[in-house]
Length: 379
Ligand code: PLP
Image (cartoon, rainbow, N blue to C red):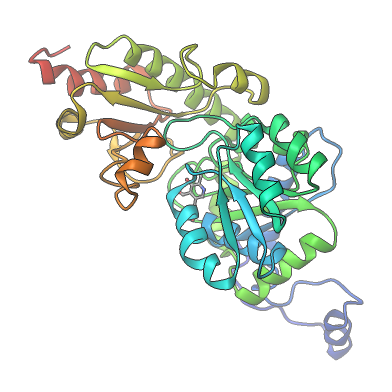
């Protein structure tokens, strides 16, 4: 049920005293804890820990960005540094560069798959307290080798490790199986799956550190509202079937795209041509629903193809049951310098597709008429 109440009555003054002194646990104020929100947070923690024999706890917050900022405020202090990758979700990069810097927390960007670069960064920056990564990463869907990264970050440098598991959901990847300390999600994406709730979650082992994260949520006020938590719970009920269909549709679309002469490159880990194909097979259950492809004709060809799209929706989000299309160079990455963009594979002709769960032929037919008409052929 949705518990919409902002506060819950004490049975008497004694219960109020006991609850405030910590003698008794009870819901009494929804910014601190809410029955609907707590139930959904625990469901997600249970999914992340499924089969792993870990005692995990979830704290649900108002968005994916709230999950990242609340967690980092909870575990970092001024002077600390965060080791991370250059191709994070754009909002996360902006949070590091524009907000956390002003509180004395600094990012160090390296290629996290380059063991020597990672080792050198830890050696050069002894204040690196945690490594923060996303795998697969937007929009080229390249994966970070979690086992290899943790072998350095945890074993050699005793660093905390945070993984943004938004692109996978716990169905496709369980980062706790590899030893990460925290997982965050924008539940706005696959966990909700229907584009009707904005929320996020932080998952970590039960203990003092997670208690501090919860306290940060409570005091900064990044709490999730019960309605969005409830919509997320409704979405989670179909997570497995949705993810299976996202994956099979994306693999079929990727294989079709790779055969089209107008397209020079397709990024999806299901393709043997993708640099993360073997790695994804090792650390993911399947290859996911996100892909991108590059039009041979560059910016003009990409824009022309997108103008002809009829079935997919133009939307800057991902992980919905509907197929979503966007052009990173002019949309999500418009504020990133061309050189940095291109270094991360975000060229002018690149189109990103969040492949939905519709009939796959509808998705392919839409792309066929959008891409094919550029050559005057209606495929
Ligand atoms: N992490 C990833 C990988 C994302 O793609 C996004 C949003 O697009 C976020 C975090 C932020 O999530 P939200 O929009 O729910 O704040």
